[in-house]
Image 1 (tube, rainbow, N blue to C red):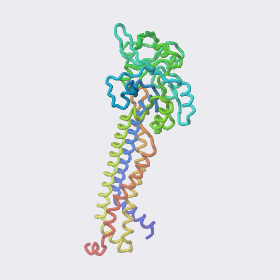
Image 2: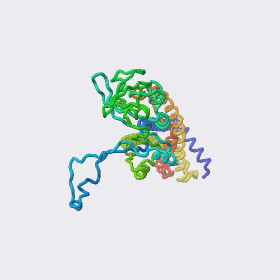
Image 3: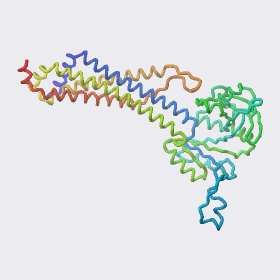
Image 4: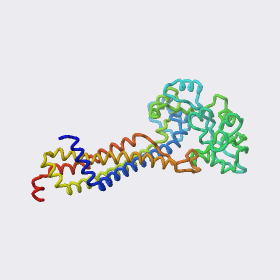
Length: 419
């Protein structure tokens, strides 16, 4: 049968039931709009939450962990060598926490094509001295330029200038929570004490806020030089090497490789923050489930409308078949009607989804806990639009397929005789 004729018949049936057709198209439009908006918002939320960790966490961290010796002195004894020796209260080895030959390691890492950059760090346990009270804290000595380039350090310094850490000797950027506990302001001088009893006065040049309150209550930053001076260590003293990779998915394999190559301990970001990946996966699954449910509900709406159209157009279908339309032609007519509703409603849904997503993205979202976030987060990933239009076409196709099968089996003789 002529496809143009089938298209004309389909358009005539659509116009004859224009109100119901518009209701079905609006149902698809609403479903696609909410599907795109929901996934864009949830994906943006996942990116924001993961960013709190990913932006501030190395993909691979190299460090030295103090562990008990695997070989105890009793194992070296000729008499007990072939025995099972049980030793309780094993003490850790007397080793330094710094990474040996870290300069050469950094040179090798910077030449690795998989590595985006390396930021050295010194981690020191300290006490903030506030009058007669000592508050537990952690001071991180960082390479200011590398930290800003690789880990967006400047974005999390909410007050003051992060570059002052490099330019002003004996300076510190306090965590927001720690500063509030000590009632410290920019320009004040605070005193800290190391675990070895060494004391040092540091000038506050800024406040840092990561968005994780428990961290901001204890964590602060100084330059590497200041941290080495605080601990009384030489310029070669580095406790951590923070590596950022070009491909974060390679972190577990790279961590194992570097651990064996440099004879240090290594941990990858997936292992260190597995709970965040689990949360993101669960939220994404929920978003897809809700979006797909909306589309299926819209498909049932189209199915019901086409079913009613068949019952109301029995005589028209009988006349079509009596004038030479085959069952397959009738099938094509109703499937074309369903796909027309799906494509029109889907395309309109894409536009409305983009518009609603843009509107959500403009809504102010200012909170002291998230200094880098100013509006509701959204993700304009094109795959959501592609999934939406494909799924709308598939849903509406099946919504039209089953009623069309019923229409194609109508016996025109029975219908006309009944009339």
